[in-house]
Length: 356
Picture 1 (cartoon, helix red, strand yellow):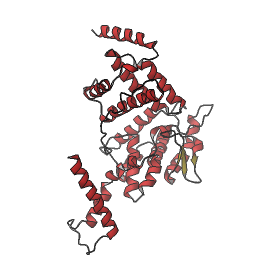
Picture 2 (cartoon, rainbow, N blue to C red):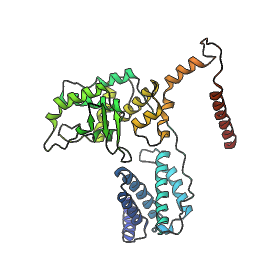
Picture 3 (tube, rainbow, N blue to C red):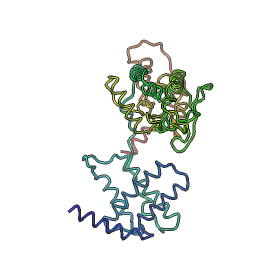
Picture 4 (spheres, rainbow, N blue to C red):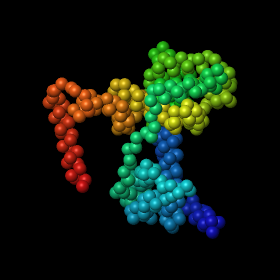
């Protein structure tokens, strides 16, 4: 039965490959246009995956050309994504569904703007709401120190790993950004690191702590010369083969050290990023500075860490709530602050009434 399905799908694919109006052909053209506009490789790849899935779904239902796609068909595809189950029986997350459908909307918007379609069948498609999930795990400062001491710094790779852990923790950079780091991107005099082509192909300069710099310099002086293989292309952190470390390798490496630490928590490179942001916020850093550190273009992406910082909220609650058991002198908040708070509460009440 499966062989028949494969044969039928292959036959259909052969029929549409030479059709310039097919969903497959036009989606490839769309993705090529993204490359011309200098979209990042990951963005192009993700949109290719989303459109390949949509094109295959259309093909299995006899919809070959983009002009045959109607609004009911797109809505039917949305329901299919919701009911789809992976090989492990789990559904697609709403974030994955959102990304797939948003790509389909962008694809048909491009077709309409380029006059390849007269009408956009996905223009009024309502995308699913994405949950604003908190990071599952965040380490305390003590737990982070326990992770940092796991590498054997007497070993060549252990010293390298300690330098990488310190760098991730100090700067909060992404694993891809760490793997691309060059020896020329570190400014010891200023205590900064230049992150080239971060998310969205944006460069940024972030501070790095003295301790991380110390371990990094120790690695550069004692270990990197043993790992590097000519010609030296300048990558800072190298594998045992002298090559630039791949992101998946960094994930496995950090995950193993977190598990080895015995703190009872799991995570990898992003765990260190979350931890850095949360601890800085708890210690009084302005969220706008954290936004710059993390490379977030939108402050809303950073605001999630204000929810994670429960320890600071607990301190404020204990110090200010009249029922928290702490005697405090009487007094009223500033009129301006109280007014702003009341306005916010009133707005929330109105919003709740409208939504019910």
